[in-house]
Picture (cartoon, rainbow, N blue to C red):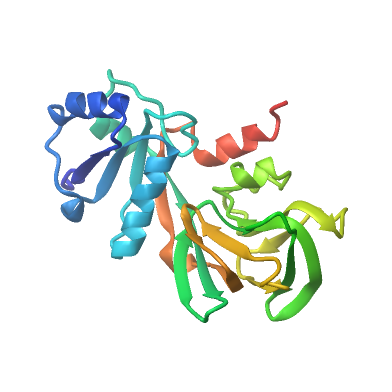
Length: 259
């Protein structure tokens, strides 16, 4: 009989998450994150993203089972104090999510890289609209996009900022990315594009002194950028665990019928 998986427990500083952590600590023999096979995350989507980023940065990625003790909890499962956490994790369905790798070069030549699980967004820094050149796989597809910004979203992030910017919802497993403008001025009617996950997207800031642009990969910001490269890091796929019948792909599907 195989050994039971070793579980680590992480909780956000929020009161509800701290109370749940106190209740769960006595229900299972927990191990440190570095020794665990799976991590149980208590909190909201923000704390889950923080945990996933930590694993990507340290190079040790294990499945994550989230319990919603935050606000939206799109990446999380419902809190059920009456059910065994070991049983819930064992029966959960695994969903693989490929993060984005953002590589930015600033006006002074500094280079920055960061992971994004939801989206990479470029945003104007001043009242002046941004002017961007957009290339896909080495070919310029849009010589000049005048806008408040533009973003690239994963399927997991397509219901977040991307949806608020009228971008498309992408089903998990579609291996696609959403390229979505934010308040486009010219071309005014461009609604964006759906691109294969294998694409590399490059943004170049035009008139960057007059029209400075920043880039944000989930929560990490780099200002005064000259160029940004975005690609899906398929070799660094993350695994999220969901209760049966409540998986992330079902939530993404259901989101398309909300009015």
